[in-house]
Image 1 (tube, rainbow, N blue to C red):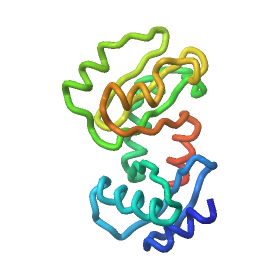
Image 2: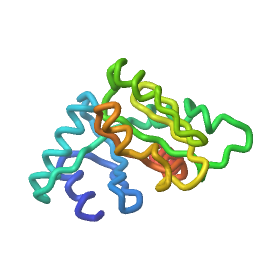
Image 3: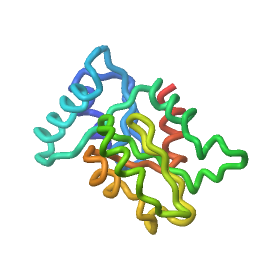
Length: 160
């Protein structure tokens, strides 16, 4: 993660913090680039430096805060955060792909798609659910990454 922080420094970012070993990086930038342009810049730098491709999804602190507020499963009284996950989408899926995906029912697990977020409730273990990152990438035809709710809350804390 120290190498990753250095790469971000070399890209001109500041206040760089990494969280756990899954590629979560919190940083500040003076760039006004849209998330997709910024993500592409970081993807290229990672590819150039480490010689492998990795998808990058960028969210502002404001967007993470809005996502936390928007989670319909977290709003429930006494929500068990160990059952909650957030799939960050690189971009908003098409209406057709969103509607098609919403037609799947894997109860008792549930999901809600809002803009570039998929809120996931897993009644059991996430790795046993059909509502995986791969499921959403294939059905929505959008690059995605999923984090458990504890990580999402920590990313929010670190970004404020």
